[in-house]
Length: 523
Image (cartoon, rainbow, N blue to C red; front, side, top):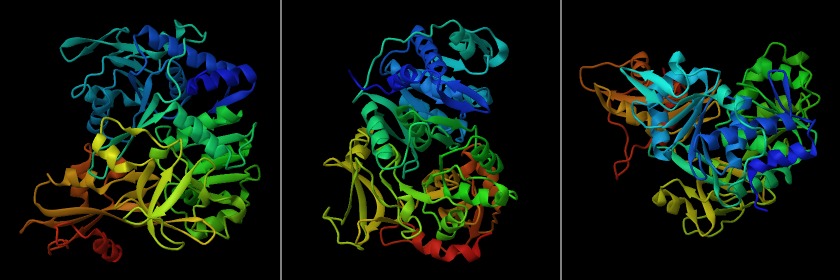
């Protein structure tokens, strides 16, 4: 029998049909109910012509429908493309076009973005969640401008007419299941192609490395278009735990959910931990049910680790990338304070090395590039052989991150991928913002760096030299970027200089110099 991630849900439904598998906004969904709904999605999509290998985009917030689609589509061998709804419509259209999405399932809040996208990219079949079709026309027809557009369908209407029996299973093991697009250093997103086996082995490497138990209640509030959140649902089904899903992160609501749902573990980013500590009722919050919590995407400040330790929760730092299906190294809770600043040891099915420029291992405490090997490492970047060759070498994933091992083999991440900004847990590459600002009038030179921010960890900071005789304000920069970039990528700070930007002999802007000088000069 071939490993198919969609079949995980069917197997869990047979083993624990009455067990609650998913909780959303107080509604409890058993594994049997969840699997039946995923089957309806699968059978409906087959009826619409979705075939193994077809790319299906998901543009919606955290919801049962997202997970129903993911597991249902996985059963029939489709390749799921989760779309970052925080992007601007033109950015989403680029990703959809690169993946050649043939079917799109989207939430009602994204109707306007879909309308805008369809001016730039062809998506033959569109399924609107929320018991509606854009323009309130019948499924199959949609008035767009002065003509009728075919291909629109209502999600609820399709599922009402679809069978809940198991579909014929297609795909599995080394077949792709998902393409996760990540921002590229050139400003263009790259699609990490992950297989059924990648997700299977990541589930294994994480659960065999952590105290993840059958019957746990696990809180997920990060967006499901992130592999770090999506893999949680896979793991919970694999081990027989319950996924408690929040539509979006809300500090007070997160704490209330921990107490009300008796949460045993959760995943967070440093900004989330910081925001929860600022909730006025934090001292009264009962978080005693939590055995452990993972925190990733950026190093966790030691004071933050200590603040949560004082509340009985050991923050376990985790290191990973989309390209390795999320998990690579984790710090055990019992050493969270002792090894504060470390991201721990390689996970069970993961090997990590620190190498120099020649690819040779460096000694303990020496800094080098972090490279990762394991059965959860992606197979390629979608239709990008150049980037694939540069990133995958002799079975190892070159992360571009710099790190070191201590004398006990614990990993410390010294510096993130070159120039990347992590703001509120979201990866932002300066080139994306620079590409937009390059066309802004009255700017002679411009670059983008990350600067420390007390709330978000880092903020997007623009360093600009206006053309002679012109001025520039932060409001003007933000206004120019709106609609061209996702809101979380908009600049928050601006540095104006009348001097040429510092550059290397090869003409590259010396961003390290700018970062060192930035904080006291930002506005």
